[in-house]
Image 1 (tube, rainbow, N blue to C red):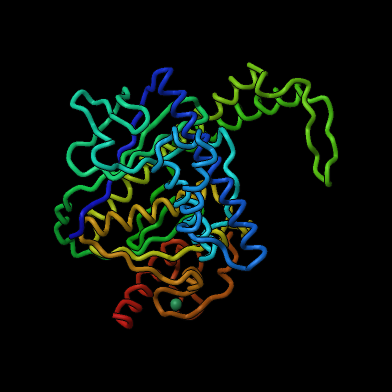
Image 2 (image 1 turned 90 degrees about the horizontal axis):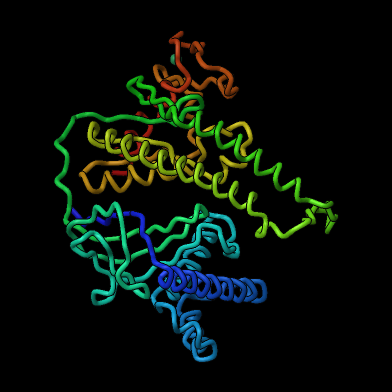
Length: 393
Ligand SMILES: [Zn+2]
């Protein structure tokens, strides 16, 4: 078993001086990211070829000689934002994400420092030492044993600061063999459907929090409208012209934080739900079969719009992947164009009529089996994945 990489995310409470230093590093990282995004973009347009991380890195060394203020920030934070940039372009070229865009202030700001020597340390009293900030008050740290790789400092729209430690720790003890294989399918009404017929409903908190979010969002929109003088038409877009700049509207800003707090809560609840569910699935099955979904394709398909966002699905499947590698389990994938819902899992005949998503149950015209749409799909995913695993070894 390989070493495990774990994240530990917790609140930090920087004092006034530390807050100023953290904001400055955020600003420098954003500046570096946007500057090289611009050069990379220009280069790509003119030559058809982007830049490389090394090119940007060399140029950054020269840049720091000119803009000495960049030197006051942790240098690994700056190089890590270059790494993020080159990763963003790489993933774009692999069609795994959309074109990289400029970082805006106040949009989940974060920077990552690499641990060198012991520049990042966890203290016995539960606080941390962070590059550029020094001793920082922390709460909720769970990290016990391991080698710290990096620390990401995050400033949320809610005004709260977080730190996420990435560390390497000893391999996990594999789960005992369960002798079970399962196919899973993304539901439309449920979160997941298993080939053994289990339905895992969408978590309940989603509904109540979504309603609350919609209500507070409407209030925010009303406050924005009340502050709008008129709309200007610029290049076919309606741009609001405000009475006062939004950053000076205290009630608007207060409401914006309220909305951000609900978003934050939804995200944490969702992560918690996904963690529990993925661990449970991994614990109880040796092999898990699932579809290789094209997230971007799903977003484009209006019919597939569902309550739980597609982000959640990719988050969840990546949890399954890494937990499988920790605990000695296997994940098998079925290509994304495999028509799992239209095949009869009993006789294997294809029924095109089931393409219509409103059909919940159907009878196979050949063998007359009665199928629940989702359970049938999950069974097909399991069958197909196992067949492919045998074929390709
Ligand atoms: Zn059939």
